[in-house]
Image: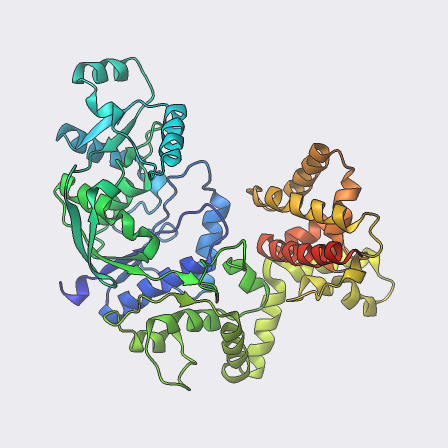
Length: 485
């Protein structure tokens, strides 16, 4: 395949805060396209209609733009193979599903969610991996036609070979073989008429002429399903590359439950996008000591997709801090540094709105730092003494902090109104006054008992920073419980 024909894509789902893992995969695809003089495409995969939101889609686009990545086609700029948002392509997929069914490679499944859950529970209890048991494979054509005509809800599943295995070559893992009995009869079309990720992914990659699919290693086990769909449709699959997942220092999977993973967290704390891309790009290249400081252009020059490691990419926050410090000191002029600081402080209107909230709460300007500095701090340095004035025991405060955190994660649109509504709902559900819920949160978020209004402050700080501050506060209060203070 000629280098000029290379087309790669990043296809995030807008179901939450953009993850640094998305930037990691996007950067690889971007560098791959640069290396081969090809095209880098952005596609929004929003087949999960219950969790996908326009707010999160905007955050994805904004985060990737902040990273310095530029795509030649996408939902914001269009292109010859659009639309680039799967929800706008809904009518495209059904003929492909019908072709699979008509050729005997798929079948209609009428199993209810209750039956499927019971089936999976029984399989787990028996020590077996949960997967569809094939009940609806035995339905006659007449019965299927009758039930469809009656309007009975159903999905379309793909058939899987009974014997043998799927063999394929991966650009990172080499030759891979996965037995067919380890592959589930995947749903291709949901009851609401929307395709699943697997079907839409294959159809879109074909129609958008994607030549190479580079994604995280968690998708390696799905390749047999995708290859089978390509075969059922008579299409040529792209070349696959599955990149090692980013992991914590203890080799555990990088997740927001343990460490900050949202790109917005790193923007809020004042990391430079060049430093973050530099840090992520080092996972894809071989360099000598002393050559670490690299721009995206320099990363592209050194990028070698034929020499990728299967070892986990360790997200070492200390190395990121070191690189960020070097970028600030060595790569920015005095004028650029001043401009970056002003732009950082002004993100999400933090500076303007913070000043607005402060105006009625100070008697002289010199009081501003103590009142509003928490909006710009990387670390509050929270101590047990900060909670001294809260009229609740450490046990009660810890219970409040632990109760509130999962509720805040459920909020789709992060603003002061939705935050207040969710916290009022927590207060009602727990039989506590809102004031009692708010008191420890106020300290956790601002580090003080005298500060700016809580709900406004939480909106300005953003979901990712609030998440980390509540985690830090939980650890401090948990230590207080353990020490009996």
